Length: 255
Image (tube, rainbow, N blue to C red; front, side):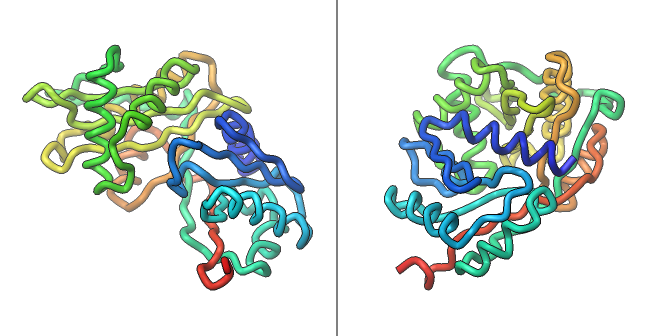
């Protein structure tokens, strides 16, 4: 699965507005934001980059005033992490990823299950963007660009789902990328603090995963941020599969 997830990461970055391919790396950039979570690179499976390859990759980020940063499944390209560390890259995080297949998906069944919807207008996309901003403590600022990215995901073959709040806004939601390499990535599962503990994350995750399987995708994968979220995903059929490594250039190496 590591090779499949890494191949997906390459294909997904190639969808970005600006793509630069250097020495076996694919860097995807979004000109409307300098967020390191939306501007990063990943290696082709199996590569062993040279010092010159890494230097060229760093230059591509610096020319744009961005933090040199990568996300990848290390087992799919064992020679990458040592080459990056030799150039001064440090570990931001190591995340496990979970995988769901049509055979393991289990829709949650309980009384008063949240109603999961697909946004259909600007107001609903904006409400979801604002809800995710609050859910993640402002790490992803709500903006017209964020709204546009959600809309592009839905219209480009992926899926976006949300649960409305009683007061008429949005309680939480998430999105799933368009598929590639017979898999898709579900990300950004977030619930506003005031609405947590009501099954919203599980309901949205199951709905998005099912929507991808309805398109014929063989699997959906995601990363989790804590044991609580892991249990939510496991309840709807996600199982531990591998790890993803996040590396960025240490500040004292960027001068």
